[in-house]
Image (cartoon, rainbow, N blue to C red):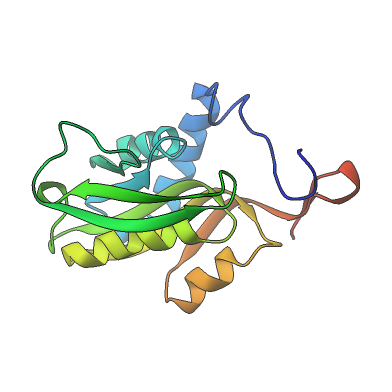
Length: 177
């Protein structure tokens, strides 16, 4: 933990990745969304890629990830949305090539963290730009003491979180019930 707002997960999720844990995460998300007719898993680089890939593998569908940085290979028709990162204290233009999402898609959004909900909302806006249906949002770790879940639910999205943290106070992780 870094204070009462930031949980450090770089030993298993976003710097070093635990493949056994990621496989279990993918299996769990795939089971929770198995009946939703998902055609694509959508995430944002980079920490969302591992759980998204494992989920997509279990569902038998592709993963599309929104890029935070401009790429020489990503030219032409793209969907662009702004996503503010409270952890990094910066706003990014996230981009997805229009050729990878369409109005025929049923999208499952997967992300590593849910805090303020800005990344998930930006991904949902990209899916909406494409005319795709967002079937749900899967979150590995939710900081329930921040407003993200409520924003997503108020926007009409189903949210499935694998770990819900009620607080990071007094040097301890307190899980939500």
